[in-house]
Amino acid sequence: AVKQSQLQRKGARSRRISSSGRTIAEFLKYSQQITLDPNSAHRRLLLSKENRKVAIKRQDDAFIPHPDRFTYWYQVLGRQSLTGRSYWEVERRGGGVFIAVTYKNISRAGSENECILGFNDKSWALKCDNNSYMFWYNKQCRPVSGPQSSRVGVYLDHKAGILSFYSVSETMTLLHRVQTTFTQPLHAGLWLLGSSGVSAEFNEPSSENF
Image (tube, rainbow, N blue to C red; front, side, top):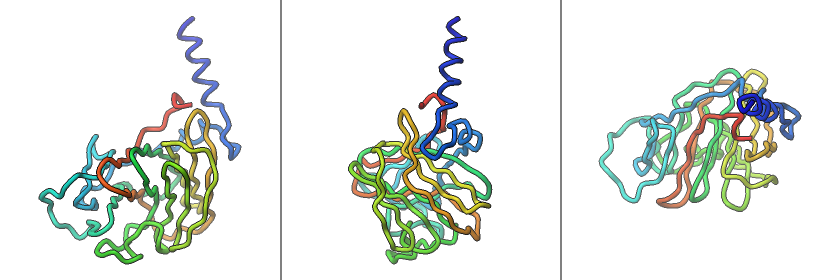
């Protein structure tokens, strides 16, 4: 009886409707595990939990130079090349984080806009902090309204040119939706703002969250 009630509750959660009119189960079908590429991580970023979590370190440590490494901004990219339908979630703590997707050929060396997630025509980013959301693309920003949550869901339909960001808590609320044409495979990206104590982690989406 206990197992049956647990299954009923889980089924109810999976049938809950997000603000976009889609069930949670639809997103979970496209769940994508994202792992971060150490070669792309700024020298002040520490990867952990099998490269699913990133945090700002208190001080520089020895690092291996690499052409893929971001040299100025605290940024890192995911390993996975995304070309189909994908859904993933990011949990942030301690401060502001840009949650992004980008073409792999974004510039890495220097502080120019060409290197910054959301500040060029190769990347799209949602800035999340404790008080607000802002969507950035090609150096243009727009305020985004929605419930505050430490967890953000990202849905990508590469072929259809759809990119959506969701606030995830007991429910799932659409924050911002992009309709465009993607011309290359995409990679998940993160830009951590501030100093030590800021972190972000790719969590496996689950209906247990709702």
